[in-house]
Length: 561
Image (cartoon, rainbow, N blue to C red; front, side):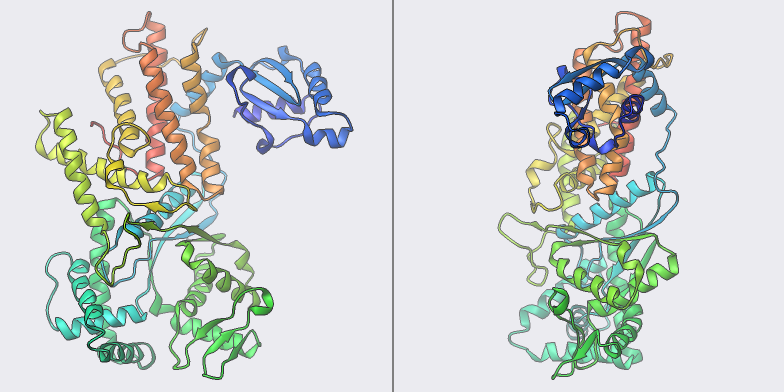
């Protein structure tokens, strides 16, 4: 809204600009919004400083009710806004819970999480899972129709190895406890014994051929049973994380469709047959390494099924966009996938996007599920919840035990999600237990605590009249209102850049600004009723905005801490 007002003011003096060119001045005394004149200098053939002065002279402040004053500072036009009037508009909009609709119900599929059904999800899976969920939530809030999709690689060699391990070590047994965790022990044992028993791997490859090529009923039944158990375990983890998917895709369902597309690529000379008999995409002339689309024995690879699934996605769901939330390890894979689709003539490839992110590592190095050296999400949640419970018991000793457990679980989930989401996607993460649960600093509990503090103030106030402005605001009231005014721009930016960390940064800044306001401004004991009611209204607007931020990030919203 603020940028729109400034653009209208500029337009009134024949200056056309876009929101992205407007800047936040480096210091408060320079105003609220700055317009740089460098681009106009090229058009008007004057220095940027001269143009800034010309624009300031042309603007009639009295004609713009939300403008307090305007100044030229070097090549910038600095706008000082009338916060007493702006506050009323901003706070009223927040209290009305007006949404931002830039999506127009366009369909966006966000595919994320994609754990291999061979072991429980480790902490490395958390990043893609949380990023995709937050992004889909943000799209939905902005008026898109986001479809949350999960993709199971149920036909790969790793699954065949788990099925083989089950047949060798646990045939006919049923899972004890969480099924994915129970199966993992056999997956680790398979790899531990592989050096002594290399024939295990040939058994796995033979089983994969029976499943994929021969579609032998017993092999199909065994694969489906093992994968089904793993997915059952995954769903328990997703439930504890508060994550739901609209649809599950299984790689095996799209292998044949992908093979048909590989045949077409071969016939159209987009691919060729290698001397060994594999089908290879001819991509070197397009600046990418060639890649195998089909093995010499006729079995497919990830890219084989990805071709079939991508074509299916756009046709079945009439998608406007599709986003894959997958680690940077697959950057080349997606470049090759998109190039093959482009060469096959699929126009939708221009609307395919890979949200790439770096890995989460342990302090001692990379995780390995095969070797049993991995930190599983389930154990992280359990450990964090125990630590959070100790803090909750200190702060709220009289609460019923079940309530304490519920709060501590919400704190644990919020701590884990925020610790991962706040990091820029291209930066790797070193997993650190200690930093997550602090109630101070840039952590999930700090944000949740700011929200519960708002709730506590409003509970104590009981009744008050909603007043969206005062004749004169102090600096702390203005700073909090200004931070609230940034919410819409931040959400749009977070979605368009596909960077939930942008929203994380804003949420932390909002919590910090609110805490500063609360320390400096008496709310419940304000000097008069009107000031008290306005400050309570400002707390209400902050609470609503904090809640929306936490919801978009898929962080639990506790009522008490």
